[in-house]
Length: 273
Ligand code: KIV
Image (cartoon, rainbow, N blue to C red):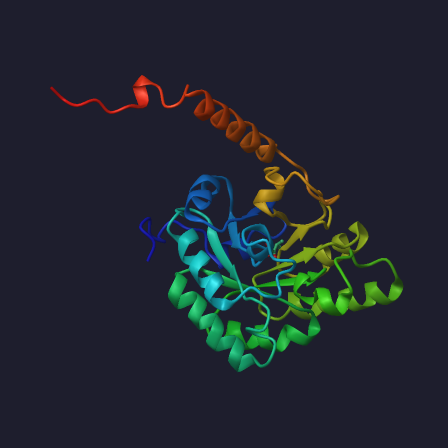
């Protein structure tokens, strides 16, 4: 159990009730200090498997393991007092069968103390989500661009640009929105579809690259903080340039170490007389 406890935290049921109201605020968090900084501003904190790329420098999320997600889920739980915490089920931990999904979701809930799990998938995952939710496991769905399917999708590409794609994500939204999931992340799709899905399904839609039409928004924290100096996707707004500031701070430190300006007297222990 987290040091700060769970009594005042938002629950998946409360998030579900935010449909159509004040937009739901969600950011990713992977560590205790970041969870502490973000918690009071968010409704949902997502321990996303994006941590594989953001923290571990992986090429995709495909190699992220259940143990990694559990370790970071525990870390985030130590830093929250308010937000509902959702931990991603990594690639390979739920697709094979609903029974495997159940066992691994139970591990995540029991070992981290988080509130819910998230899993990617459209109509093919609806039965699994119903199986989990009927057995006490709150699930956040994830449709549209699904990063765990990078190899079959042939890359990271927004969806909904043809009638065939629209028909597919319409079926996905309908299936997942009515599967028992308490909310659904919609990633990388065109605005017209996001608006249609938000109107059509009974649970909140949380968009990332899916326009302002959704019931809430999620971003990868490191992206919106500008911790990367390289490529920024079109759907990301950088609210700061922490990457540049970290570089500038490190350069100032290096200069002062080399010139012996740091440490100064005030940073130096003296023998007590
Ligand atoms: O892993 C992640 O961070 C996510 C969000 C981008 C929705 O799934």
